Image 1: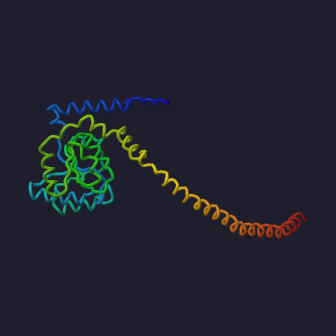
Image 2: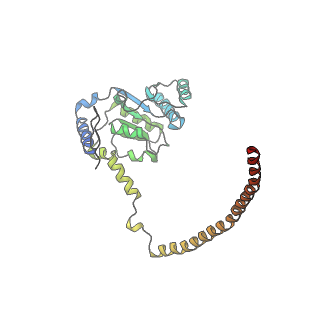
Image 3: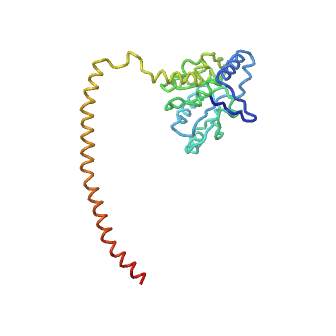
Length: 269
């Protein structure tokens, strides 16, 4: 077995050690000091593209502002649509502050309590998974790409503007519940690998029966015969032009050889 070489100043942790560290963090979140873990409100982290749901977020914030007053949302991310997104937010008079490129490794982002992601086209948003694992509130639209996050207690799904407004009020007023060891493991690479293997594996009852296998064999025989005939015909008819081209090249070379000999004699003379 190959061993990882530990670099100076770098501490390697096994998966079990990382899980234990997460469990200890989860345990501390049950304490009253958990209320001081977050000093900032709502934010969004993602590529500055309209397809990432910025327009939907603006619509929802406008609805919430009309019902409960203005809420400031810090937006992190860069991209080609950033100038038009900033202009549209300014035109609507929304309290959206654009802070440029960042990620969840930045200490400033770890202070936010409420993560909002209105994108409906993500397969499984990495930023959302990170926010949930960091025990923040995550406010997400109730769409198929977010169904994985449904069992987590700190995830608030909405299907309407009113539902978004209620979820935002709850998240800003309350502290997110701590994740259990089961929820933390669901966010680990080990659990993701197990889900991948389960999705890719074929159960015994899913294998084709004798009749289906016989039908597949019957289809394979004419397919193979046709493939052999096609390959043979291609080699036969494609070989003739190639042979003709080779003969023409040889004839040209033979015609040029006497001229080269004459030239060589003239040079020597």
